[in-house]
Length: 331
Ligand code: ADP
Ligand code: DP6
Ligand code: CO
Image (cartoon, rainbow, N blue to C red):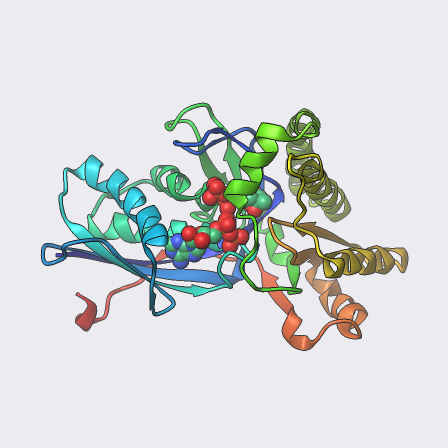
């Protein structure tokens, strides 16, 4: 029996990954940049066991259906093939993040699974190799191997597409992200389906590709200069452009809800009152607001009359993936 367990934190992209060049290998159309966060994470254990007759996937204590389990099996097959291993596995995962709500559960979830496999089979992968493996499960997961800021260089092959940490002189420790939870239910259009439909049918997609690499360069420059407004402005603009592409897809769709628009307006009004803060959204209606730590409580006060305490979740820069020692009973 081979067992391993890992914890990985979610990351939110400031410059978004949106579109695949290779759907099988998960090679993206564009590079992206993210901040790993401490508030949301996944813990996953994997056990390859000769007594199992099929793969099992338990998420938050619930045995998952065939569709979800097949996704996990396909990921495990990558590792099994590489290792010439013919054992089924039990994957037991706990999400400390709402699943499939646009809060990046696939990033922490698949990074944690990759980390658990690395440990269970003693693969001794480097961080870059682990990032490449996590990428095969969910693109955004390749960035959750790293703490703080990470950049996923799109590359053009399995070998060359991976994330790396960005040198930042610990600037991320001065930043915060406020999550405004307007709906933590499962979204209608998954990230995978949403980006596929956009690439295949949106007449706005070419505009996205024309601007995103310049946005990435601006974001990296802002990090190097510790220029908060520059980073915030490009984050907000890039996120809006990503969401713009979905409106021209066939059929069209949007991840925004009326509540999302309300949060965006509140961020703009906070800025007009002299509070530097900027929003971004992923494939879901929840809004994330980038703010300097020193201004976080003022921002929360600005939102407090509109949202409950439970809806406002503070997050700070989070750490890289970590192994979790197994309890004796789990070995
Ligand atoms: P999100 O915004 O939460 O990342 P996605 O649509 O990208 O939403 O991905 C959601 C999918 O990610 C889930 O349906 C499931 O297949 C997968 N997922 C989420 N959490 C885990 C986990 N802990 N372990 C394995 N897979 C997970
Ligand atoms: C909008 O990584 O969830 O959050 O690779 O198909 O699993 P798959 O998609 P996923 O897409 C994330 C899209 C995004 C932007 C981002 O995180 O960069
Ligand atoms: Co996801």
